[in-house]
Amino acid sequence: MSQIKGKPARVQVDPNEFEEEQPPQTGTVYNIWYNKWSGGGNNHVLVKSKYKLDVERDSGYTRADKTQGTGYFCLFFAKGMCSKGKKCEYLHRIPRDDDVFPLTVDCFGREKFSENRDDMGGIGSFNTVNKTLYIGGVLTDRKDVQDRINGEFKPLGKISKINVISGKNCAFVTFKSESNAQFAKEAMNGQSLYGTDILSVKWAHEDPNPEAIRQKKRTIEQETQQVVLQLLDKYKRQRQDDGPHVEEPEEPEPVQVVQQLKQIEDTKPTTTSNTNGILSGVSLELLKRLPQPKPTDRKSLVNAYESSDDDDD
Image (cartoon, rainbow, N blue to C red; front, side, top):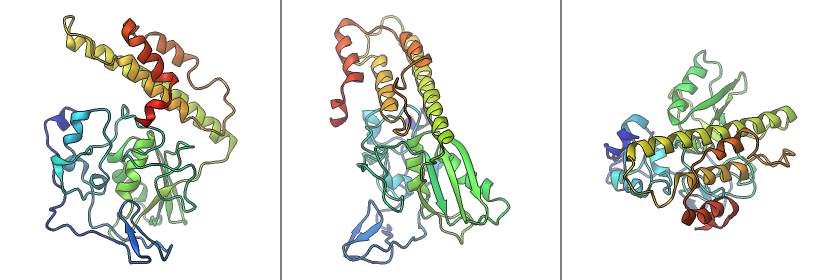
């Protein structure tokens, strides 16, 4: 984070030399958000991208960092084609564990839908948590293909698993965070592993196996506990850095913790029969360790968890 603060975001593409890449026209209206034509045809032709994100080189602070914790990520930065650099109104970095977004939008601020598209492309559904990407167009006959996939996707977020399907020209990449999966989907669609191939990156279908569903539930519970521990540690370090004579912040850290947990509970798999909710056992014990908010802040702490109106602001 310190490197981002001290380094302005780089202009990835000179606006005077920018070439807007579009697939072959199959309709009358081109939608840049979906990279497809509408109004006259449904055929989508994948085009190899002319641009590519270089995480180490391109990441830096933008105008969005002035509103830390509320900004969305730049879609064009993810694609390697933002022409605004530090003047951009969106974040130019990789999503972190403490980045939280309303359930109805993705990390770029685009509204989700109740169901996934038939072809599993697009933004995704707000009814499910999907961290796994389907990677089509993979040259699975290459011996180093898994290393190539890992090398390209790892800079975009922490990876839980990579599964290459031999003979099917596809692979599956599972991220630890849904935001990183959303980011990687846009960053890698239309990219290439070997120069001659073109990757088609979509959302993977959820595994219907009951054991896979139970494993997903266990994973979310573990992530809940990790979020609490991380934010507790962050709060303690912040108090130590501020010193005893610094005034309390307007919104205490516990409120942010509860907001994180609210999002995790709301996004638990709907296919499980968990009637007790995510916030149980170890997670509740961890919550008890949070510093008690001041009386004036108690109402905001309760509302942060019980009310869903905050997502509409």
